[in-house]
Image (cartoon, rainbow, N blue to C red; front, side, top):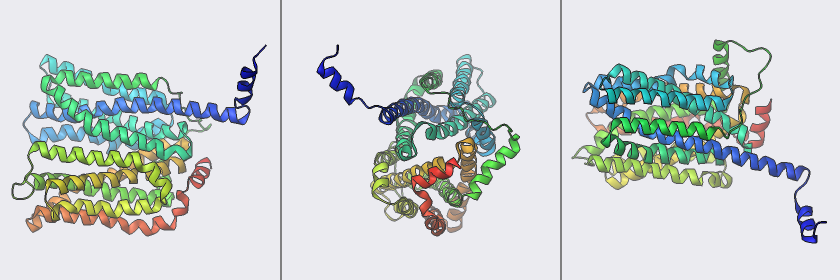
Length: 434
């Protein structure tokens, strides 16, 4: 016979719908923690490879073309393979894709490490390794973004995306490159093997996730029609179309701004930073992104999303122009931190909207196609900045031209305001179920 205290406690336990809700929230939190743990290990490994692969290329060959080829091989999958890999993610159990992507990256780095230890590493082997790492990166990032709506509710997406962004900025942008560089100074093989070990940890962390398989229709279209379906879904949705174009402007301009800023910041007649302080500027910039990632959910609750998007679009260009008018270490640090914060708030809102508004059955290919379109023009950025600087014989003019180009993305804001009602979670969720 139970005691009165036990009986009272039993009476207070949630039953019926309340019990179901509590169990659902518990499962959601557990799955989110598993995905974030996998994401953290994978991003720390990414940070290692951001340093290790370029340095290995520079040690293997002093040819700028060869080193550039290794870097290009890592980026090529985003431009050429992302839409097809997005379709693959849509047709597969996402947990298996997440684990397979990390297995591909880990095994590729182990092979490169063996080549380093054996003394037979060359640029073709390194380029092949970078290509496989890039393919794994596309598969993993697309699948991780696609998995979130299946794990958390529509109202929790901004918070979940903010947590992913914090981990990415902290581990991929700051801690990973620093630790990778330290280990690389001791042994290149150790740095590669450490990255492979971290990818393996990401595989193990993902084992706590459900299969995350999307229900298939009876008739499955071919790969080309499926790829086109992803592009069509972006173009038919007015907000997705505007967000993609505005993101493309931002990616293009920042890709051109970074190499010019390196020249501007290290010029002794301008800011005059040494390599340590130049790296410190970027570390401070990452801190700005981390701070905004933490604050993003609260900001979104306090302010309309469309106003935050407008502020991030306009202020981003202002921050890019800031070092030209005030060429100091402090202003350069503020510029990178401010711009990083603008990018973070933009990404959290637009990615969450995409996850809510797109049917889950095609979300993988939409995510991949969106990035392929938005990042496709990035290689033109350095050429535009270089042309503006050469034409005026001034690095500062090139930076200003790119800042103006960044702000010109605001030309699409009237269309965003026209459809701002669709940014509310309930409307997005209803649309995604259609």
